Image (cartoon, rainbow, N blue to C red; front, side):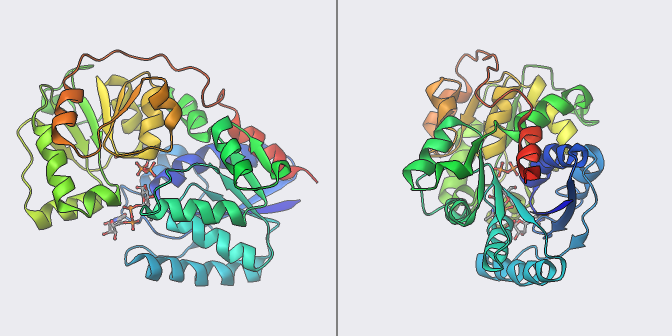
Amino acid sequence: MKTIMTVLGARPQFVKAAAVSRAIATQPGLHERIIHTGQHYDPGMSDIFFEEMDIPRPDHQLGTGGGSHGAMTGAQLQSIEAILLAERPDWVLVYGDTNSTLAGALAAAKLHIPVAHVEAGLRSFNRRMPEEINRVLTDHLSELLFVPTPAAGRQLRQEGIDPGRIHLTGDVMMDAALYYRELARRPAWFDDLSLQDDAFLLCTLHRAENTDCPQRLRNIFYGLAASERPIVLPLHPRTRKTLERLNLQPSSQLHIVEPVGYLEMAWLEMHCAAVVTDSGGVQKEAYFHGKPCITLRDETEWTELVELGVNTLTGADPGLIAEQINAPMSHPSCGDLYGDGRAAQFIARILAEP
Ligand code: UD1
Ligand code: UDP
């Protein structure tokens, strides 16, 4: 029996783990233990995902949320190391590109415990993003690299990573979207806002490059204020804090609500006219649910969506945002760019190999 020690801590990792942990549970020869770093800690940013998505309860809770990058990553590193020394798992499994990802990979690699990285090979080529630093380092610390797309695999080979360690699996977020779509749930507040199906924009906004720069954030809000459709914005706590600090008032068609759970988010994605976001995961989910995406960033890791014409980059340019959110919307159909919904099973099989 092999023990997989999963390290997670932020919202997108719960979604990815929901798919992979289910596959690990049914894969003979594997046993999973989970460390939750506590990077995200509000009930609406963490607990709700474990409850709704039936993710196994973490075996360890580290409570390392908040603080600067160094303080957070350092605290995570120290706590994870102690657990790995005590438990000596066969693999450490990490997801994506957050500080929790890097801390898990670094703690394991220094103890010579092999690291498996889900969503490897993604690049924005923008080293000012903390995520870019986290993902490059994690990839180069990993023994097994599970890539969602052929482009991600090519990138890793170009960086000199042994092709034998790279596995093209498809995207585990696609697995989650297919599995949970039947359970998608209309938010209780939806009707109170007098919103109609296919007639509103769904927006999310949390990326450091947008929220840490007051002028960018103001520009994004100017752009959104020009929308001819109502906008629903389930607001990340980071952005809420910045808005309060800047005393930035939303325009009348912008409905700011608390972050929603995955099932309500999926429903909103399935029923909106279009998605407007700076999230990595939400860009893909727009495509999974057949919706166009307007991305409030200067570049994206998911370049295939831009090439396909279903994702448009506006950066924080208010004129471009206004133009794109009011442009005629066509609904793309989801193809096989991200696999067939069995990425997690594939990953579990590889982890179980002798
Ligand atoms: C983190 C990830 C980012 C990912 C995002 C997903 C890093 C460097 N960034 O960004 O890649 O896209 O998660 O959502 O790892 N906060 C709360 N309650 C919470 C969580 C956060 O109030 O439950 C507030 C705190 O003030 C915290 C701030 O948000 O300091 C930022 O949280 P943090 O986890 O550092 O970064 P995110 O912006 O969430
Ligand atoms: N999500 C959610 N509720 C929200 C906003 C996002 O359930 O209010 C989900 C979303 O559907 C996706 C994941 O969170 O599965 C993406 O996480 P996030 O945007 O925080 O991070 P990123 O993908 O940018 O790293």
